[in-house]
Structure formats: structure tokens, C-alpha cells
Figure 1 (cartoon, helix red, strand yellow):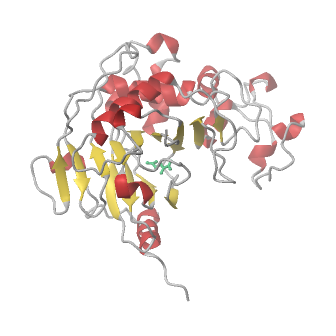
Figure 2 (spheres, protein in one colour):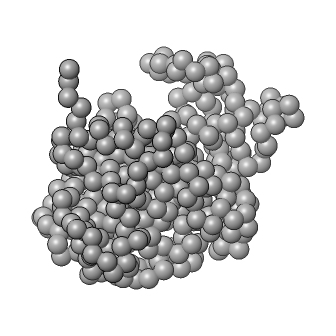
Figure 3 (cartoon, helix red, strand yellow):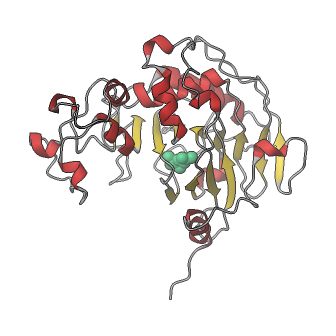
Length: 357
Ligand SMILES: O=C(O)CCC(=O)C(=O)O
């Protein structure tokens, strides 16, 4: 009988739904404060976090927030929520409204004729009562419009073969790709490119500059932090039961630039392992606003999300009126629509520099 790897064992332990996950050994950076935790080091960012001038609100709550590394995973840096509440709401709006629009691709595009306006806005403008909604409110399945790519395998679930309500589609939104479009089948960036959202890129650049100036990190001549630019990104949308299996992100030619990842909404258990699945992974809690940067050796490490924890979203996301007075609120649907989504979802938005030059 084949032996289960250490990574797989840890995944199974956190995924099990017949019991509450045991969080006793999960590192919670927010709870560390001034305590020392074996194998965890507090770092100083040697560059301040600078609010991008393109954003009309205060982005970072402090310019030099605490940051941490883990001895067992060289190059991994965690900055526990450096953002203002308003900045987190802005990231949620960006990820749900702006970034899901074509030409960015989503997991739903192969099966549905999605609107060029955002699916989120459409779902916010309609309600979910199928009795009341006419066919004009439904999004057509490509099976019915004859626009399905012949190379696509239809899922067994009949949901993908029929027109669907926008709110039901939103519940099935799992990812969208930004900039260079990643192909999950070939594992290459071979589906063309869209323009990476420039405001999101500005945010990712400020984070990249701050983390790569940490003196503990190896510097190579293939990468200079001032040259970080988001060339490709993925936004992952999780509900309370969604998981992401352990994997390594290794398609990018430039593995010296950091992979910058921001999490908003529900807390999750994130596993960071080593270069093979045989390395015992370290479980960490990623809470709303946490930034994780994979630099150096950790850029080639197995990682995944075996568990999203229900009822952990912060009130500055879930209060129905929380975002109504934000600087950008006029551009987006009413905050109560986001609040309902954020109550039961986690969004992870990450950016990579792909090329060496
Ligand atoms: O959701 C996360 O924190 C992890 C995302 C991830 O690993 C990926 O997009 O490759």
C-alpha cells in the first residue's frame, strides 16, 4: 500500500468535516504580539509601505507593520493585516466587480455567456427568486447558444448545461486570471493577456518593494525589487467548503521575484511545506487582510488551503453599511451586497512577475 505523504496527511486532518479542525498547532501571527514562538522570527521591513497615489484613500494602517518569517521555510514572509478597513473593502470590490470582467477569464467562461458588466453587479441587481425572474435575467449556458468550445469537457453537473441565475453563478465563481492568462490544462500562460488592473498592480508593487527589502532575503541579479510589476495574477474565491490542494507555482520564468498574495474575508488554514510533499508542512492562519510573500526558497514550496473557517469574517466587511461612505463607493453596487458575500467567503488575490527582464 502506498504511503501517504506528510503534506497529504496534514491536508486530510484539516479537511475532515466530521469534527472541528484542531488549531492548537496552527501559527496565528495576530496572536503572537511580543511573545516568542519557536521557529518564528519578527522582521523589520526596511522600506515603508507606501500608499499608491492612484488610490484615493488611506491604504496602510501603519507604514512599518510587524512582519514575520518561519525558520523552516526560508523566504516566506507574512505581514499580518497591514491594511485599513477601507482598503480591504476596496480589494473585495476590485476582485468581485472589476477583475472578473472579460478579457480576464473565470472558471465559468467556458460554460456561460457571461455579461461584459460584472457578474457581481448583475447578481446584486437581481434577486434569487426564480419564480419572479424572467428568462431575460438568466445567463445563457453556452451549450444552449452553441458557443461551447468543442475541446471542453462538460461537467456531469447539469447546472453547467442550463441558463442560470446570476446569484447562483456567483456561488460557483472559483477563480479569475489577471494579466497573462493562465491555462490550467497546459499549466502555461498560453491564453493571451489582458491588461493587469493598474491600481491593483500599484498595490502589489508597494508590497513587493517592502518585502524584498527585508535584509534576511537572498538577492539575485535576476530580480531588483524596484522592477516588480504584476504580469500575471489569480484571484481565488472560496466559500466555507472550498479547498485548494497542495501545489507549487512554477510556471513563471522568474522565480526570484516574490509571489505576493493578499487574503480578504474568512480566515483559512494555509499549509506551507517544502520542495516535495514529503516535507511536513507548517499550518498557519491567514486572516482577513494578511499579506503573504513567497520569496527565495519558499517560492518553490508546496502550499495549499485545506480549510476555510466559517464565521470568521471581520465586521468591517460584514456590516451592511460598512462601505457606504468609502471614497470609491459610488462606482460599485451598494455595500450590503458585498457584506452578504463576505460573510461566507474568502478571496485571495495574488500577483507574480513572470519574466526575468
Ligand atoms: O488562497 C490562497 O491563499 C492560495 C492561493 C494559491 O496558492 C494560488 O493561487 O496558487
